[in-house]
Length: 78
Image 1 (spheres, helix red, strand yellow):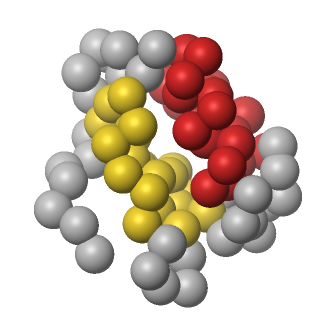
Image 2 (cartoon, helix red, strand yellow):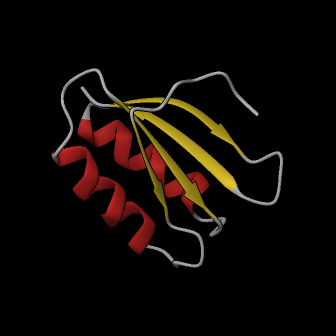
Image 3 (cartoon, rainbow, N blue to C red):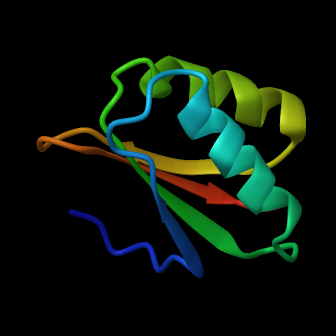
């Protein structure tokens, strides 16, 4: 999968857009700068909504891994 170490993980499998992004945004707001969030999702739209959000938020999109059944998104808090 990947060797990125996440400080916090959330599971949004089964949730449809925009709920995975809203849960991630809520979680990121409570995180400290430099921490990494791992989001596990099943909705394929997350592959486009998360990069757009991170672009606006100033956080850093480290990786999107969609090589398996689920989608794993890694974001570093600004």
